[in-house]
Image (cartoon, rainbow, N blue to C red):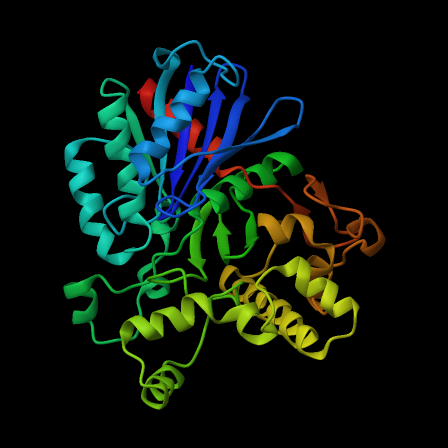
Length: 399
């Protein structure tokens, strides 16, 4: 069974083709700059060689056609025809309260996803473009939607409600939804598997730290709280997103700067976080280099970034009644040892001890970084959202 996984962004398409019989990745790559000058398809060959194919890609249909053409092409192809694709799994950012698990895509599901677009105007319309395109190009191939928000639908009402007038919830659905759910679900389950324990009875804090970041409290294998909210802006300090902030500060800035809602959204989504403080880049690698050079602003940005993660771990340890496992994942969580060390420093009172020399050697490897006498297991688990999407797709097809 061969399953194609698509993750369509506003100007990009990421794809991965799995042979689910052998769990092998047959092909993976992505298209960038859709609708812009200099658009291209980038992928790696089995020998590791990177290939970039430039082509004008005005919109998603042309982009997905290009991907399918490459997968079946004589030069770079890995399947003989499109008939080899059993199903397509799609990452969908926002499922609102309508979806608490992955679903087979029908017209009714598409209609409900359209309704959720108001809650994720930058993401859901792009996800839908991928679904429409596959319906057109591969009309007989089943499609499955896997929602970023679904894993968090187990949160209790006192965790997901905001203390706003209740009608904001009934009229507009304003509440905490959370994101990165596919990643949090995968790494929390994989951590238990890796450590040889059952999810039941485990209190786990999963830290998905990347350019966007979120933390989730997982009890008995279920999400009970998460740091992102109605939108992916709430919670941690991120690459360009502000994270938690006093709403009064925002109304103050709106007045002083003459910003409308779009201007404010731009400020908190694209100009804040690490970029806002560091003022050079949102890339944690560049920040780390600047810290090593002793740049004060870089040091401030890094201290703020680590502190916010540490504060959430403390809060979720309280919500869980203690913690058994802390998981680091995501681009930064998996690869940046200084982030893991900086976050865990000062958590000794909770029984957290990490093996600092060993941690310093770890990049993107599944391993335990806590010491043998640490009361809390601290692990690095590389996330694999695409495999989770393919796995869900296969499960639904077999129902």
